Length: 510
Image 1 (cartoon, helix red, strand yellow):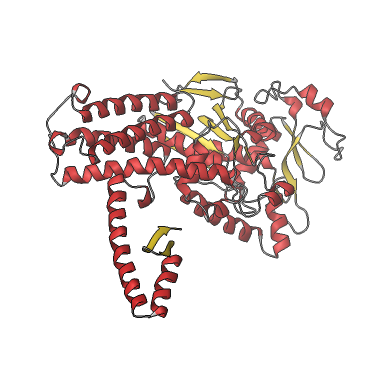
Image 2 (cartoon, rainbow, N blue to C red):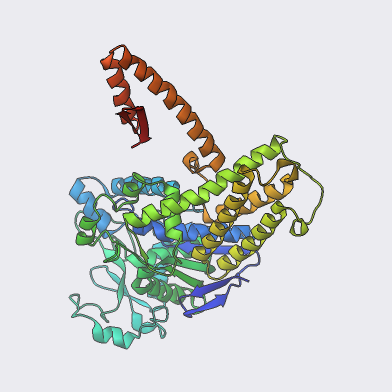
């Protein structure tokens, strides 16, 4: 039983799909006027995990995510750079995909763009005009009339009367109500435009997502998501215009899911906040962060806080996540080492049916713990996609694997007593957790491997250093100081410090 916190009802609800065995999702995408920053990444990582989870639960998932490729900011950037709006959009959409691929975010089923959906947008606006929910100004601007819908503000919990009382003096006095919002903007010199029944122009911000979600998911679908900053006005306005156009206040999205802000410890990460960008220069865009840290480490950090809670993002937090990832990766390599030994025939591999839960060996105890933690993992995900708690259960399994592997390396567990099938089941459970969280899909760092490899490496390094120091000592005896100093210098460059003492040369890592 999956429970979802619905922003509309402000409560957790039991998820009941519109169509049995299917899940339909629309997530508001980016406006590609610049490279994606780390705050942009959170909703897409969140929805990627939700999609993975539903797929594991046996659902067929259809996921749509748009690009707002026609926008005031894109036009401004294009004019500043002396290029076209298409050039700006294409460049930054490519940067978006590169960044999201590095975070293991699977591609949406379709990425509609405003520029490719213009006919549908114009048709929807005309429907709102014909039904009396929108009005056309003399210059060709079209506005939605918020007073024509009784429950405007139901998603955000705001009352229209309060919003009107708190509204600033409206510069555009042609609007019937200060809260009315643009559906179509008449063309201005130097801006891109499309032909419409009201003259040349382009869409307002909100209408695009309504037209695209309805086109690709139908009049009613399961989930609509995005950052919590979109609740008002964007999603509120989407609901108003969509349900008015459809003619059914129960249509459009059934569950509204919003992730919390990412902050730098002071303010929300945002391209529009110049001071915040200045503070985080060099560690703000996804590309800047990925230049210093692996994508899976960053992904893990974004999932270690429940999606609805605010998340503080800074380099110290990323370093903590890198250490945490290393511990998870160590268990990955430990299980991989054991699996290779099983496949090599070093352990017993009984392919017959067995009840793992009643196997009395130490491996049997491990698989029993793994099955319990897998159940806890799914329970966490079923409770409003609680990745933070789910990862905790995965970490607990990693610790159990480490304890078991440590006992094996010490000889406390003999190979003849190991049932390979059981350990392979533990590995499968661990990788099932990883597949939902979305890690171990890139090369896993070898330095996070097992204690046995580490021990063997130390023995090899010690043996090689003994040989190197003997060669250096021979050079010193023959007064070949150039060779002796060269060896010492190159070892220092490699991170090894050589010190000459009365009892001979010693070495240690830098």
